[in-house]
Amino acid sequence: MRPFITAVAVCIFISSCKKDETTLTPITPPTPTTMYFPPIGSDTWETVSAQSLGWDVTKLNEAVDYAGTKNTYGLIILYKGRIVTEKYWNNWTMNTVYYIASAGKSVTAFLAGIAQQEGQLNINNKTSTYLGTGWTSAPLAKENLITVKHQLTMTTGLEYNVPDDDCITPACLTYKADAGSFWYYYNAPYRLMQDVIASATSTNYNTYTKTKLADKIGMKNYTWFNYVLWLNSRDMARFGLLTLNKGTWNGNTLMTDQAYFNAMTNTSQNHNQSYGYLWWLNGKSSFMVPTLTLVFPGALNPAAPADMIAALGKGDKKIYVIPSKDLVVIRHGDDTGDAVLGPSSFDNNFWAKLMLAVK
Image (cartoon, rainbow, N blue to C red; front, top):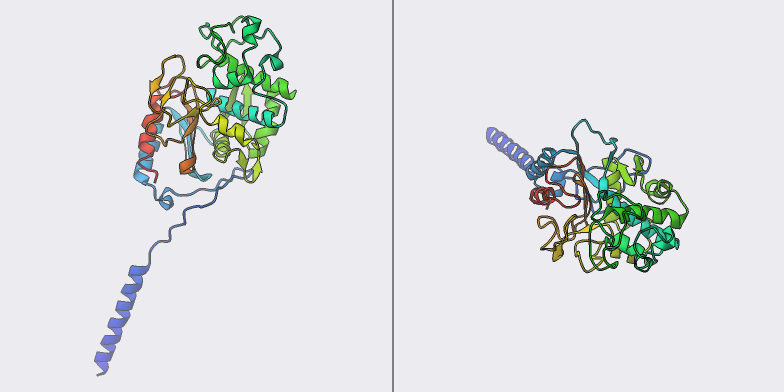
């Protein structure tokens, strides 16, 4: 009987081992449920794997590789503030600073809201309240129709067919139509928004950006030069994360005026449904684009989530913010070959690929 008992014992032991082997599975980190904010004054930034989020890693890599073929030098994808993807090309690093062109307009819109909530600026006031009369060459009665809000919404009515779209002298800012009567993407009135904020707050614009925004969210490599903002990709991501959280950073609410934030990130006028206060909006029934007066039916970026808002700059500088997915996506670099001043075919092509990965 003893050999039989031994054989049974061996069988039980082997069976037990096999059972243990089949129940041992890799431990998958839980999907983050809270928002993360990278610490101020540090390069530390928490990460999360695409696998743990249930994303399709192969499709994600295809989207990243596509961006890399399009003169992208810095690409960051955040989920709930954590880095899922951070990749650099062209000898860039996380500290490389480069201009973000008109994507900086959205930063100015945010700072205008800060100035207004502090009682130093009223966007419904005439622009001449802050710049003085004669800042345009329009008849005074027509100049007096232009408010700060018209500057924020690209509806000043000022002539845009000038040799230099960035010219801000009165001779370049001529009357075309009454303020509010049409939408046209015109850089000059926007550039003067920075002067409006500086005048209203009696503060140098770089200093105002530092004290009211950069220092509070840890943007360390930035500067305004000739009205254009220069940032590294991580600082772009920090601003995107702040916007994802409606102006709150790790419990510190920079944008207490949520009525302004909501107005900034929703349709701001009747002409271009896809434009807020210097922010581009997805998922609307129609859109307009820079340099044209045509209205196109449909969403700005059909492949992306409908609630996406975006800071878009010449050469395809991008800060995409998608509240429904808790995503911030940064694309930094040079012209993809598909670019105009704002939206381009890169947006839709990239998001068509990325949405195959994101769950």
